[in-house]
Image (cartoon, rainbow, N blue to C red; front, side, top):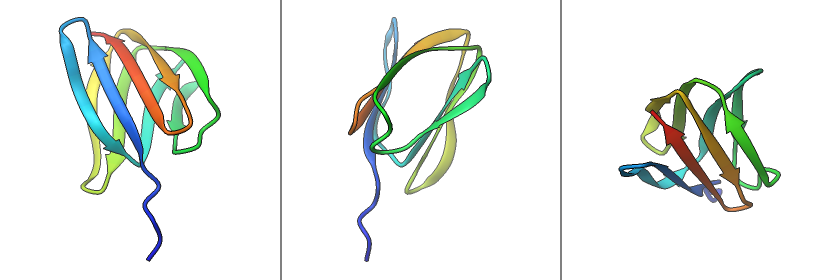
Length: 85
């Protein structure tokens, strides 16, 4: 059985943590459409466009929050999303 390709996702706003836990696939909005992020993604920092932050984990795909703007920081084994609702 293959190991799951998961990383740790943290989504926060000025009031606190909206989500913290495992993630297999993260979708964040950009000016050119949604960006998909998986484990071992190239490290980056990006300003997000208005839209929906979505994720997929073992239980399926779901929307976490709809944002006006925000910043996503991606490291090799984690992603942090700071959002402005």
